[in-house]
Image 1 (cartoon, rainbow, N blue to C red):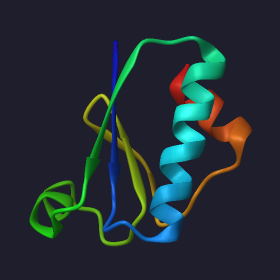
Image 2 (image 1 turned 120 degrees about the horizontal axis):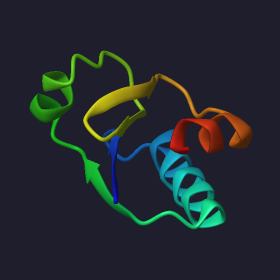
Image 3 (image 1 turned 45 degrees about the vertical axis):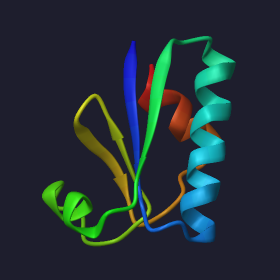
Image 4 (image 1 turned 90 degrees about the vertical axis):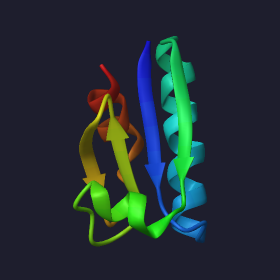
Amino acid sequence: MKKLQILGTGCAKCKKLTEETEKAAKELGIEYSLEKITDIEKIMSFAVMSTPALVIDGIVKVAGHVPEHDVLIKLLL
């Protein structure tokens, strides 16, 4: 099971990244857990300076933007 974390304060881009990540994970049929992290201190603990960010299994894969769908698919494989 993949552990997916969305880092962000709840802005429109953060919500879009959440939606797109879930869409890609469901399309791939993978088992996943999704956690939204909005606490600034927790976000900073990942050394992320711009949100939204996507963390997959503890590793920051995307920060500061919402990637294209095909990029998300590749990241989740």
